[in-house]
Image 1 (tube, one colour):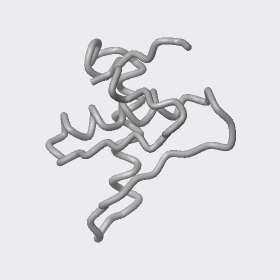
Image 2: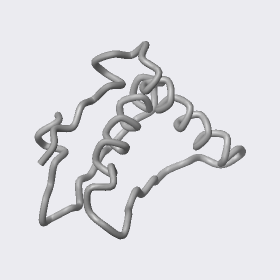
Image 3: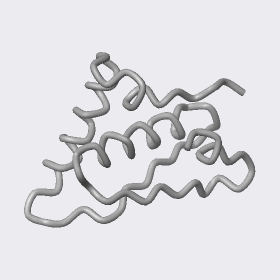
Amino acid sequence: METITLIADRDAKSPVAEAYRTIRTNIQFSNVGQELKTIIVTSATPNEGKSTTISNLAVVMAQAGHKVLLMDCDMRNPTQHKLF
């Protein structure tokens, strides 16, 4: 298993961290006029980057002042507890 890096936390000025902030901003603007309560990230096959994406997205959302609850519902291969 490859290691997951919280690039948004470790190197906040990197282009990758900026890309996660761009995703955060796009999510916020896609729901103008309504409060966003839930984001679900899923895919059809393993090892597509779901854990990396959602953990870094959670970090940039928290950095922006949002309340964040990250739930790892992968019962076969949970990884979020290793990151945080």
